[in-house]
Image (cartoon, rainbow, N blue to C red; front, side, top):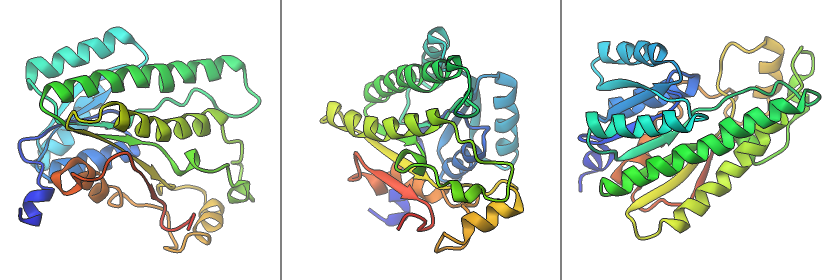
Length: 258
């Protein structure tokens, strides 16, 4: 097959949760540019619709739906909405995350809320989307984790800033998601579905100048990730170009942890 055909997502329906977030918008854009029909979600339908409208204005086939992954009824409704509107699903980018925990010495209830959103709720959504993809004939699941699921915090990045109290749930959940990816690949062997994980480094978002200096001097590429850096990797894993990549965690950090 021609390499352009291998990377094409034409006639593929792909769901991206958290598509209005920083990395979410990059992912939606990249999949749409590869000719996928993309469903972007948010807990608030209006926010998802605003995101979809921006990309449709640019000529991309992007649709909006709502889901609160911490709410089982909302997850069930999303499954039904996809079946009714599209009849199938070929890919799922598991990207939505909640940030209820704001540091280490905080009320324990914040950790419990994070577990409901980012562990229990996320797994429910992952399991339901997996079943729908299998029913549709197979496809690809891409979990978005973080390099922080592979290492502890580097507190020197925060020297000279007001930052520096990283919440523990972020590290806990991302580490779990990386190994859950491997679990899913094994459990669903023979069903024509692949599971892979991307662990990005930091994405530039107008962070304080001192933080940028501290961080970027450690990166061989000399910078944080930009909006385009994740797009090609997501398209690779979602398309036939990545048909033999399964159960992997890909570190996308510009060489920071080389």
